Length: 310
Ligand code: CDV
Image (cartoon, rainbow, N blue to C red; front, top):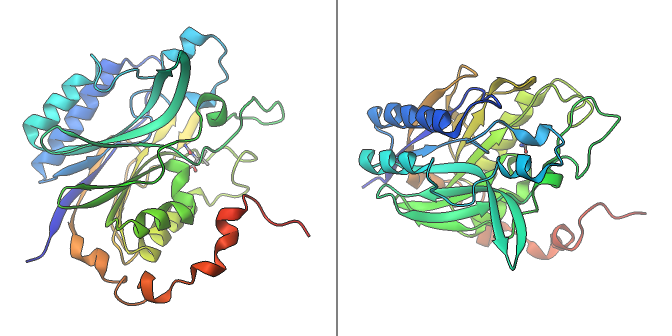
Protein backbone atom coordinates (compact mmCIF):
# COMPACT_ATOMS: atom_id res chain seq x y z
CA UNK A 1 0.00 0.00 0.00
CA UNK A 2 1.51 3.34 -0.97
CA UNK A 3 1.90 6.02 1.63
CA UNK A 4 0.85 9.45 0.42
CA UNK A 5 0.54 12.89 1.96
CA UNK A 6 -1.19 15.80 0.29
CA UNK A 7 0.94 18.82 1.12
CA UNK A 8 0.51 22.49 0.31
CA UNK A 9 2.79 25.50 0.15
CA UNK A 10 0.70 28.50 1.25
CA UNK A 11 2.60 31.41 -0.22
CA UNK A 12 1.89 34.88 1.14
CA UNK A 13 2.03 38.13 -0.72
CA UNK A 14 3.58 41.14 0.97
CA UNK A 15 2.80 42.14 4.56
CA UNK A 16 2.93 45.86 5.28
CA UNK A 17 4.36 47.29 8.48
CA UNK A 18 0.89 48.64 9.25
CA UNK A 19 -0.84 45.24 8.85
CA UNK A 20 -2.09 43.87 12.16
CA UNK A 21 -1.67 40.28 13.37
CA UNK A 22 -5.44 39.92 13.13
CA UNK A 23 -5.35 40.86 9.42
CA UNK A 24 -2.48 38.50 8.72
CA UNK A 25 -4.11 35.62 10.58
CA UNK A 26 -7.33 36.18 8.57
CA UNK A 27 -5.26 35.72 5.38
CA UNK A 28 -3.66 32.58 6.78
CA UNK A 29 -7.04 31.13 7.62
CA UNK A 30 -8.30 31.86 4.09
CA UNK A 31 -5.25 30.00 2.72
CA UNK A 32 -5.96 27.09 5.08
CA UNK A 33 -9.51 26.85 3.77
CA UNK A 34 -8.34 26.82 0.18
CA UNK A 35 -5.68 24.19 0.93
CA UNK A 36 -8.23 22.05 2.76
CA UNK A 37 -10.71 22.32 -0.12
CA UNK A 38 -7.98 20.93 -2.37
CA UNK A 39 -7.38 17.98 -0.08
CA UNK A 40 -4.26 19.18 1.75
CA UNK A 41 -3.38 17.51 5.04
CA UNK A 42 -0.34 19.67 5.75
CA UNK A 43 0.21 23.36 4.92
CA UNK A 44 3.56 25.15 4.99
CA UNK A 45 3.48 28.89 5.66
CA UNK A 46 6.53 31.17 5.14
CA UNK A 47 9.33 32.36 7.41
CA UNK A 48 8.33 35.18 9.83
CA UNK A 49 4.76 34.79 8.62
CA UNK A 50 3.05 37.12 11.04
CA UNK A 51 4.72 40.45 10.24
CA UNK A 52 6.61 42.28 7.57
CA UNK A 53 10.25 41.13 7.21
CA UNK A 54 11.52 43.55 9.88
CA UNK A 55 15.28 42.64 9.77
CA UNK A 56 15.53 45.00 6.80
CA UNK A 57 15.42 47.89 9.30
CA UNK A 58 17.75 48.95 12.10
CA UNK A 59 15.73 49.66 15.24
CA UNK A 60 17.01 50.44 18.73
CA UNK A 61 13.83 51.05 20.74
CA UNK A 62 13.22 47.80 22.69
CA UNK A 63 9.44 48.27 22.65
CA UNK A 64 9.43 48.79 18.90
CA UNK A 65 11.57 45.67 18.44
CA UNK A 66 9.59 43.49 20.85
CA UNK A 67 6.37 44.22 18.95
CA UNK A 68 7.56 41.96 16.10
CA UNK A 69 8.02 38.91 18.36
CA UNK A 70 5.62 36.34 19.78
CA UNK A 71 6.04 35.54 23.48
CA UNK A 72 3.57 32.65 23.35
CA UNK A 73 2.33 30.33 20.61
CA UNK A 74 -0.55 30.25 20.20
CA UNK A 75 -1.12 33.71 21.61
CA UNK A 76 -4.36 35.65 21.72
CA UNK A 77 -4.06 36.75 18.07
CA UNK A 78 -2.80 33.46 16.63
CA UNK A 79 -5.24 31.16 18.45
CA UNK A 80 -7.91 31.49 15.69
CA UNK A 81 -5.41 29.96 13.21
CA UNK A 82 -4.89 26.93 15.46
CA UNK A 83 -8.65 26.56 15.97
CA UNK A 84 -9.39 26.81 12.25
CA UNK A 85 -6.69 24.27 11.37
CA UNK A 86 -7.98 21.80 13.95
CA UNK A 87 -11.53 22.17 12.66
CA UNK A 88 -10.32 21.60 9.09
CA UNK A 89 -8.13 18.68 10.24
CA UNK A 90 -5.12 20.18 8.58
CA UNK A 91 -1.63 20.40 10.06
CA UNK A 92 0.75 23.30 9.53
CA UNK A 93 4.27 24.73 9.68
CA UNK A 94 4.38 28.34 10.80
CA UNK A 95 7.41 30.64 10.91
CA UNK A 96 7.51 33.49 13.43
CA UNK A 97 9.85 35.62 15.55
CA UNK A 98 10.11 34.08 19.01
CA UNK A 99 10.99 35.93 22.22
CA UNK A 100 11.67 33.88 25.35
CA UNK A 101 12.92 35.03 28.73
CA UNK A 102 15.37 32.65 30.38
CA UNK A 103 16.89 33.46 33.78
CA UNK A 104 15.78 37.04 33.31
CA UNK A 105 17.51 37.31 29.91
CA UNK A 106 15.61 37.91 26.66
CA UNK A 107 16.46 35.46 23.90
CA UNK A 108 15.27 35.92 20.33
CA UNK A 109 14.98 33.28 17.64
CA UNK A 110 13.72 32.99 14.07
CA UNK A 111 11.47 30.01 14.70
CA UNK A 112 9.08 27.56 13.06
CA UNK A 113 6.66 25.12 14.64
CA UNK A 114 4.89 22.06 13.36
CA UNK A 115 1.32 21.30 14.42
CA UNK A 116 -0.46 18.07 13.51
CA UNK A 117 -3.97 17.52 12.15
CA UNK A 118 -5.39 17.19 15.69
CA UNK A 119 -4.02 20.59 16.60
CA UNK A 120 -1.25 19.02 18.70
CA UNK A 121 2.17 20.64 18.84
CA UNK A 122 4.70 18.31 17.14
CA UNK A 123 7.98 20.20 17.19
CA UNK A 124 9.92 23.41 17.05
CA UNK A 125 12.91 24.54 15.00
CA UNK A 126 15.06 27.64 15.48
CA UNK A 127 16.89 28.94 12.40
CA UNK A 128 20.55 27.99 12.49
CA UNK A 129 22.03 29.80 9.46
CA UNK A 130 21.39 33.51 10.00
CA UNK A 131 22.38 35.62 6.99
CA UNK A 132 23.37 39.27 7.04
CA UNK A 133 24.95 41.35 9.76
CA UNK A 134 24.80 42.09 13.48
CA UNK A 135 25.05 45.85 12.92
CA UNK A 136 24.00 48.24 10.15
CA UNK A 137 26.39 48.43 7.22
CA UNK A 138 26.80 52.07 6.15
CA UNK A 139 28.17 51.11 2.73
CA UNK A 140 25.18 49.00 1.77
CA UNK A 141 22.05 50.36 0.13
CA UNK A 142 19.85 47.82 1.87
CA UNK A 143 20.27 46.25 5.30
CA UNK A 144 19.78 42.67 6.41
CA UNK A 145 20.17 42.42 10.17
CA UNK A 146 19.16 38.91 11.15
CA UNK A 147 22.33 38.50 13.22
CA UNK A 148 21.29 41.61 15.18
CA UNK A 149 17.71 40.47 15.82
CA UNK A 150 18.23 36.74 16.41
CA UNK A 151 20.69 34.33 17.92
CA UNK A 152 21.50 31.11 16.03
CA UNK A 153 19.06 28.32 16.75
CA UNK A 154 19.93 26.00 19.62
CA UNK A 155 17.66 23.05 18.83
CA UNK A 156 19.59 21.39 16.01
CA UNK A 157 18.07 19.83 12.90
CA UNK A 158 15.56 17.41 14.38
CA UNK A 159 13.18 15.08 12.63
CA UNK A 160 9.65 14.53 13.91
CA UNK A 161 7.32 11.54 13.48
CA UNK A 162 4.13 13.06 12.10
CA UNK A 163 1.73 12.87 9.15
CA UNK A 164 2.66 9.21 8.66
CA UNK A 165 6.24 10.17 7.85
CA UNK A 166 9.38 11.77 9.34
CA UNK A 167 9.43 15.52 8.92
CA UNK A 168 12.27 18.02 9.31
CA UNK A 169 12.17 21.80 9.35
CA UNK A 170 14.50 24.51 8.10
CA UNK A 171 14.14 28.26 7.58
CA UNK A 172 15.11 30.31 4.54
CA UNK A 173 18.90 30.66 4.35
CA UNK A 174 19.24 27.12 5.77
CA UNK A 175 18.02 25.81 2.42
CA UNK A 176 21.24 26.91 0.72
CA UNK A 177 23.48 24.80 2.98
CA UNK A 178 23.88 21.11 2.13
CA UNK A 179 24.52 20.30 5.80
CA UNK A 180 20.94 21.27 6.64
CA UNK A 181 19.38 18.54 4.52
CA UNK A 182 22.07 15.95 5.16
CA UNK A 183 21.73 16.02 8.96
CA UNK A 184 17.98 15.53 8.71
CA UNK A 185 18.33 12.86 6.03
CA UNK A 186 20.75 10.99 8.29
CA UNK A 187 18.02 11.14 10.92
CA UNK A 188 15.66 9.49 8.46
CA UNK A 189 13.61 12.45 7.24
CA UNK A 190 11.39 11.91 4.23
CA UNK A 191 10.05 15.45 3.98
CA UNK A 192 11.64 18.81 4.78
CA UNK A 193 9.59 21.98 5.27
CA UNK A 194 11.06 25.42 4.61
CA UNK A 195 9.67 28.96 4.78
CA UNK A 196 11.56 31.86 3.25
CA UNK A 197 11.80 35.64 2.58
CA UNK A 198 14.27 36.19 -0.23
CA UNK A 199 14.82 39.64 -1.74
CA UNK A 200 16.17 39.86 -5.27
CA UNK A 201 17.15 43.51 -5.07
CA UNK A 202 19.84 43.39 -2.40
CA UNK A 203 22.66 43.47 -4.90
CA UNK A 204 25.93 44.01 -3.08
CA UNK A 205 24.50 42.52 0.11
CA UNK A 206 24.13 38.91 -0.99
CA UNK A 207 24.09 37.99 -4.65
CA UNK A 208 26.33 39.68 -7.15
CA UNK A 209 24.13 38.79 -10.08
CA UNK A 210 20.55 38.37 -11.17
CA UNK A 211 20.32 34.67 -10.38
CA UNK A 212 18.30 34.79 -7.16
CA UNK A 213 15.43 32.73 -8.55
CA UNK A 214 17.77 30.22 -10.16
CA UNK A 215 19.68 29.82 -6.89
CA UNK A 216 16.42 29.29 -5.03
CA UNK A 217 15.46 26.42 -7.31
CA UNK A 218 18.97 25.04 -7.45
CA UNK A 219 19.33 24.86 -3.66
CA UNK A 220 15.96 23.26 -3.05
CA UNK A 221 16.16 20.79 -5.93
CA UNK A 222 19.71 19.75 -5.03
CA UNK A 223 18.79 19.36 -1.35
CA UNK A 224 15.79 17.22 -2.26
CA UNK A 225 17.61 14.99 -4.72
CA UNK A 226 20.91 14.52 -2.87
CA UNK A 227 19.01 13.52 0.25
CA UNK A 228 16.07 11.78 -1.38
CA UNK A 229 13.52 13.93 0.42
CA UNK A 230 10.36 15.78 -0.46
CA UNK A 231 10.84 19.51 0.10
CA UNK A 232 7.91 21.88 0.57
CA UNK A 233 9.27 25.43 0.32
CA UNK A 234 7.09 28.49 0.83
CA UNK A 235 7.85 32.14 0.14
CA UNK A 236 6.67 35.43 1.44
CA UNK A 237 6.67 37.23 -1.86
CA UNK A 238 6.06 40.45 -3.68
CA UNK A 239 6.86 44.10 -3.14
CA UNK A 240 7.04 44.54 0.63
CA UNK A 241 7.98 47.86 2.20
CA UNK A 242 10.37 48.75 -0.63
CA UNK A 243 11.89 45.29 -0.94
CA UNK A 244 11.19 42.86 -3.75
CA UNK A 245 10.71 39.30 -2.47
CA UNK A 246 10.77 36.38 -4.86
CA UNK A 247 7.93 33.86 -4.99
CA UNK A 248 8.50 30.44 -6.53
CA UNK A 249 6.96 28.54 -3.61
CA UNK A 250 7.44 24.96 -4.65
CA UNK A 251 7.00 21.30 -3.94
CA UNK A 252 10.01 19.25 -5.00
CA UNK A 253 10.11 15.47 -5.22
CA UNK A 254 13.02 13.30 -4.01
CA UNK A 255 14.00 13.05 -7.66
CA UNK A 256 14.73 16.78 -7.60
CA UNK A 257 11.82 17.48 -9.93
CA UNK A 258 9.55 20.42 -9.21
CA UNK A 259 6.02 19.02 -9.09
CA UNK A 260 4.22 22.28 -8.26
CA UNK A 261 5.23 25.93 -8.22
CA UNK A 262 3.48 29.23 -7.50
CA UNK A 263 3.00 31.46 -10.50
CA UNK A 264 2.26 34.70 -8.62
CA UNK A 265 3.97 36.77 -5.94
CA UNK A 266 0.76 37.02 -3.94
CA UNK A 267 -1.27 34.82 -1.59
CA UNK A 268 -1.39 31.50 -3.46
CA UNK A 269 -1.71 27.83 -2.57
CA UNK A 270 0.14 25.10 -4.44
CA UNK A 271 -0.71 21.50 -3.69
CA UNK A 272 0.80 18.12 -4.51
CA UNK A 273 0.11 14.54 -3.55
CA UNK A 274 3.45 13.31 -2.23
CA UNK A 275 4.31 9.63 -2.49
CA UNK A 276 6.27 9.17 0.73
CA UNK A 277 7.78 5.87 -0.40
CA UNK A 278 9.55 7.82 -3.11
CA UNK A 279 11.85 9.16 -0.39
CA UNK A 280 13.41 5.70 -0.10
CA UNK A 281 14.02 5.50 -3.84
CA UNK A 282 17.46 7.04 -4.21
CA UNK A 283 18.55 5.93 -0.74
CA UNK A 284 18.38 2.36 -1.94
CA UNK A 285 20.59 3.11 -4.92
CA UNK A 286 22.87 6.05 -5.65
CA UNK A 287 22.41 7.64 -2.20
CA UNK A 288 22.47 4.50 -0.06
CA UNK A 289 24.19 6.36 2.74
CA UNK A 290 25.27 3.31 4.75
CA UNK A 291 26.92 1.72 1.71
CA UNK A 292 28.47 4.71 -0.01
CA UNK A 293 29.22 7.53 2.43
CA UNK A 294 32.82 7.88 3.64
CA UNK A 295 32.53 10.06 6.74
CA UNK A 296 36.21 9.83 7.71
CA UNK A 297 36.91 12.05 4.71
CA UNK A 298 34.31 14.63 5.74
CA UNK A 299 35.81 15.61 9.10
CA UNK A 300 36.84 19.06 7.95
CA UNK A 301 33.19 19.92 7.47
CA UNK A 302 32.48 19.79 11.18
CA UNK A 303 35.92 20.70 12.46
CA UNK A 304 36.27 23.90 10.42
CA UNK A 305 33.89 26.79 10.04
CA UNK A 306 35.67 28.45 7.13
CA UNK A 307 38.30 27.45 4.61
CA UNK A 308 41.75 26.40 5.75
CA UNK A 309 44.29 29.15 5.24
CA UNK A 310 47.39 28.15 3.34
N1 CDV B 1 15.56 35.35 5.22
C1 CDV B 1 16.68 34.88 4.65
O1 CDV B 1 17.38 34.06 5.21
N2 CDV B 1 16.99 35.37 3.41
C2 CDV B 1 18.20 35.05 2.72
C3 CDV B 1 18.63 36.18 1.84
C4 CDV B 1 18.70 37.45 2.55
C5 CDV B 1 19.93 35.88 1.17
C6 CDV B 1 18.09 33.81 1.86
O2 CDV B 1 19.00 32.98 1.94
O3 CDV B 1 17.18 33.70 1.05
